[in-house]
Picture 1 (cartoon, one colour):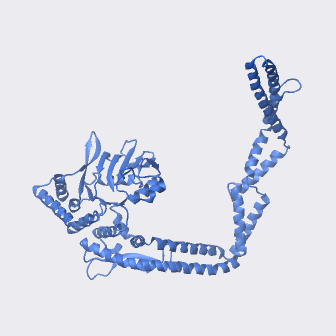
Picture 2 (cartoon, rainbow, N blue to C red):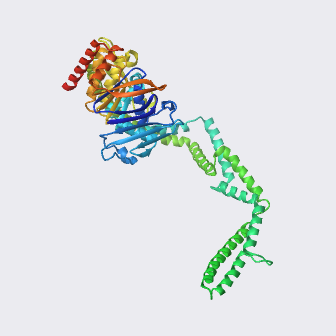
Picture 3 (cartoon, rainbow, N blue to C red):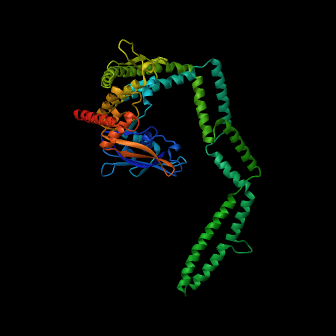
Length: 563
């Protein structure tokens, strides 16, 4: 669970520390006070996408730290070399800078944003106020069903078979071209292959040519330098070189060394210098003797490099790329020349692949059909608890359009239907559900999916939009029920939901020294009563509103005790 959150310079929050508890935590406050900024800060600590505008104006750095406790033994920890401390806690830290730079750590270890996001999504799920709109997107309904059904292994088996089928189909489509197209492509390939073969390309030759060209372009300078070095080291008929002078010095000191031990030691050092000088002289001589070129060699190299430059524009940035293009062209030419024979061989393979994919797809569909009926029952039960007993919910599975009636997701097209009133036909949710109904259906969906979800904490950011009265009470009870098995954090404007919380935080905005700031305060009983009265009345609470708020708190406590 998320036990501690530290925020620095995030939007209007200059600094805040929030200690969350197990169970049901809520945040309330005036619109614009910064409640959702707290959720944005949590998202930042979990590696979610952020904007530079999230930094407080004028701040050189923003920082969010989140401490998690009671962590499950996630494989991610071993895979990434991160472990909780001796108390079983893990500190996540993310620093944000105006230039877009991020510094992320988990348990003190540096991570990429992607690694942090991967971990964060295994620790906490954030459900935003607009997520109910996802129910309007029918292409996402299949994902919801598969999550509930645990279709992962069957879906993976199907996708492997479908991938083989799709690859074969692409290969055959490439071969199924008109005679004219095939002839034109063969002519093009033959020309390209001929041009590359005539070039006689050799791997690594361009580097050798460039090095040789640089040498030849500086031949006069190099020749002079080598000649001068050889003369200095070896000498000539008129004067001694360094090696000879060192030999004379070594000979003189070696004789004197018979009398003076220190001079003998110097003689030994001179001998080593002499040997090194003679060795260097030999290397310079060898280089000079090997430095042989013809007058036209530079022109030949320039011509060859020009050929490579021209081929590079058509066939690849390097000689290796050109050779790869040549090999691929040869293979394609062979396929096209043998296209009819290849198609005959591929036809039965395509049929076998289609049958394998259909067989796996049918197994997946049978699994989905069973899960769909179960999901209908579960959602229906949740909706009754959320004061929607007359709403009917259904999962419709239809055959999918397209080649062979399948795509990478299987054979099924899924959409959620509902009937909001008795006697009305089931219709797509997108066409008839109100905002409040969408919020409650999404909450029912999350409640059902959370049972198989290993994530230990859930955040609901104003998902109660469009809900009021008796329905709000039912939503509050449902969130309290979820909070019995995992930590729940909720941003809300509804007193019914706020009253049901185990811990209540008030988010307030103010002005200090000409700057806007937001503070987060944990409320006691009286503070909660005053805040609930404000949520109910919208202004300075009256005695009657305070009394009503107290009753709301007592009723919520009684519900939690009964449960």
